[in-house]
Image (cartoon, rainbow over the protein chains, first blue to last red):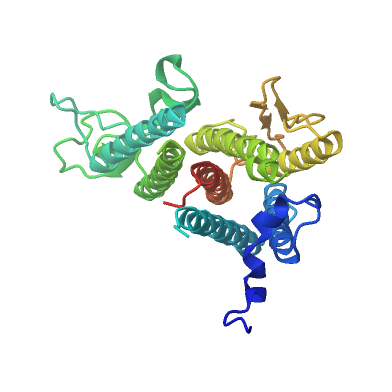
Length: 103
Length: 137
Length: 145
């Protein structure tokens, strides 16, 4: 009997079920990949902030006169952070929506 | 930042006083008699600045003294002049104030320049104060 | 990890010290300009280069020892109190440094240029401080609006 719907395609949505199983530590490729991605982006933003801080310090100690470079660095860090914040908010909203879904 | 305003305003007052004295010199450059009719010419006046706000209330500047210039009067031969000297070795001469107009003009320009500089500085002080207040907003 | 980056209190302290320095230098400059025509008055000065060098050393020191509070030391004109506030001691400009006939040694053009440059320093410090605090608030609130 042929299955009209292939249940293989449903696999990506099943991680919560799999988490109940003994091998809980080994997350699914998709779930682990996404978490690692977020962590990676956090590190990036943190790094950009550190670079901007270093540039400002250089300005305050007279090591550089380049105002525009400092401005560019601080703005980049600011935007990266804002972007990350928006992604976080959207993720939370999406999760809320999923949570309230009636299956 | 507020006491910086006080410093600058003391300078504005001092330079303004100096300008007033200079203006008086210029106005009376040819005054050959006193108000009450005494035949004695106007004597040039000057100011001396000293550091410190007036009444010792802090830093700044103030007018320490307004003095009269002891240098000699100018003499011009003009026997027909109502204020000409009647007797003595200088009979027939008129005594004119010891004011040099060119010097007074240069002095006035200097005083005005100092006044403008202090005014510009006060403007910067106000900008800085506003920026400081924006940290609270 | 990244929260410390955001609070970056070492940089905030550096910004505070810079603002305090610029404010005190402005006061010294105002006094010099006020006395531009005062006979025998010698200008007092707060050296910006000395402050910058002191700040640089303090930042390096704090980086090495892992502290967040900066300590200015080893300079004649600037230092910090135990609770981190700037103390500035202006020096009197030496007498032979270009004397006018009445004993003054000030050039108005130089002073006014210094005033503008110093105002820029102050403006920079306060603006960066403000944007820092706003960034912190944004992170805390969690929403950009």
